[in-house]
Image: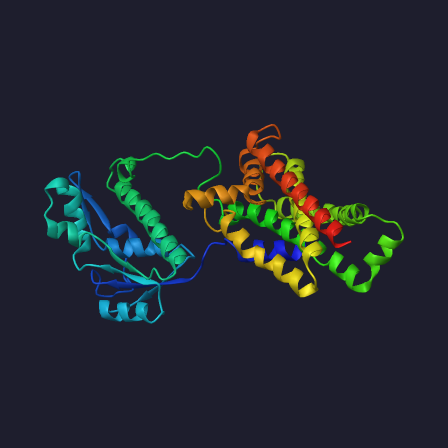
Length: 379
């Protein structure tokens, strides 16, 4: 099961989107598909002055080279708008009739350019943001492609290419610009999966033993509740060794996702979280009267823990009280510790790593104590 779950994450989560429909209305070119367009004819340098022709087609050609965008041409804005409203595209872009001329004048006149020149020298883009992730990704990609387009035009004009860049230079301390989303979500997936796999494995053990009379016979035979609890925990902990190993091997050895820190430390953080989940499952099993109750208790804890643990949205985006509550729950600091080892190479002596290991141990200890308390009351 852990292998299947990780394969689903690898092949369905965070992959680059493809074939997103984007409408195009190009009033600059009578033939909207740029059939007779030539790349070499778009920029002409004469007496240190640049003249532009059909730059809209040059930009659209750049979109052809990107698998994310599927251009769909329309004759009018009304047609493109209708298609976007009826889900045929995720938006559209419009090039004014004198786009190249206005962009040329805009670069030449700079701060003295008239409002009409600035307006006609823009690409008008309208996006469907009902799916914010697709809309935001498409917007970001269009901006990146336009910056590349602008840089190539500057090079052809014999201008300094850096002048086409935004005046912010960004360097990365950890990670890379084009890292897939999976790289950031996998630590959270591994930790929460280990917790709930452990919880599911132990959440019905004591319930079944009580229903089948095994628990009572063991007590009569002189076995204490402490011995029985730890025997179950020990046996399930052996299974967790294999489960944790499967996840780490699949993600970081077979699929070769990048990691900087120690694989053994990553394994230890995930394994401790599995033990914590098993302790939670035993606690649920000790207070449940039937299998339905124990299953509902485990699954009912699943969504709240996923939501507040920082997998779907950063903890820093939550209200202050919820941030504190989130960090006190079993998974949040363990996820942060695992991610820090993977992306930053932190060692076991680092405070973040210690917190991640400690939270699993503390909650596991608390769950075991509560389990023993309820079992002794039930005798």
